[in-house]
Length: 358
Image (cartoon, rainbow, N blue to C red; front, side, top):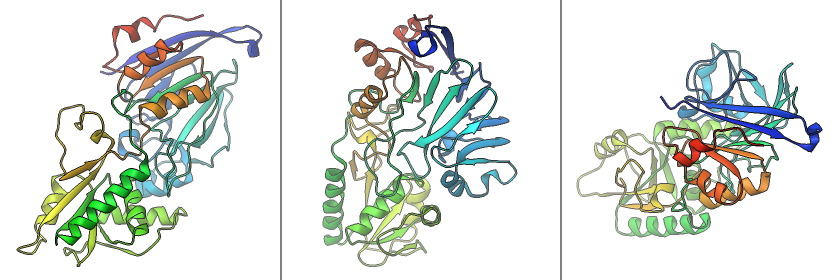
C-alpha cells in the first residue's frame, strides 16, 4: 500500500501566532483527515475533488467536485452521481472548509484545488497534474499562494527538463513532412485525452490533413463542445489513410494492430511519439523502451524546472510531493523548504521530515 502520512505544525502571524496542525495522507489519492476531504481518490467516496478527467485521478464518487469542462470530458461517467460543478474561482462553502478550483494547465478543465480550513485559516493547495507551459487548447495554469502545497512530481527529477515546446513541435512538423515525402504514413502517438488533442491542433495549424482514432476523435468533439476551436477539419479513422494524411492514435498494441490491418501492401508506417519520457535517458522509469520510430520530449506535465519555479511562485511554508519522483522534495529541502515526498518511493530524508515542524 502506498499509504504515507505527512504531519506538520505551522505558526503564522496571520493567525496571531496560533499553532495549528496540517495532516496530509496519501493512499490512492490525497486525504485531509481533519476535514474528512479526499482529493483525486481512486476509490469511490461520498465526496472527492476530481482535478481532471484522466482515469488515474477519478472514481465513481457519489458527489464529485469538478469543473464543468471536466464533466463534459467524462461524459456519462457520473450519470448516477450528483456532481458539484464549479467554475474557476467559484467557492464551494461547507461549515469546515471552502474549496475553489483554479486552472492547472494540464488538459481541458483541469484544476488545482485550494482548500481553506475555516477554523485555522490554513490554505492548502493541491495541484493535481500541473503544466506551466502555454497550450493552444487549455486554460493557462494559475499560481495560487498557499500555506501548504501538495504538488504532483511526475517529472520531479533533474533529468527531465524539456526543450521549448515550439522547438519540439517544429521538429515534429519537419519529421512528418520528411516521412510523407518518402511515401510513408506518419502516425503521431499521444494519450487519447489531452495530448492527442494538442497534437491535432498543432498538426492542423501546420496544414496537414489529419485522421484520428475513434476515441481521440470523440474527445476532440467534446473539447469543441467545451469551447475549443480547432484550426481545420479532421476526420475519424475508417480503416483507411488518405494520401498526405497524418494519423493520431493512442500508444499501445491495439492501435498498432488496427493500423497494420488497414495498410495496403507496399506502404509503410512511421510512428512519432510525443512524451516527456523522451527527455533524460529516453526511457520510462519502469524500464520500457520507446515505442516509436522517433520520440520527442513534449509533455502536458510540468518539467523539473517548472515544478521548482511553481513552488517559488506560490511560496508555501510546507510542501508535499506526490505521484512521481522524490527527487523534487529533496531538491526543495536543499533550498530551504520544509518538503517531503508521500508515496512508496519516499526516501529516508522524506521520512525524517514527517515529524512536526515549528
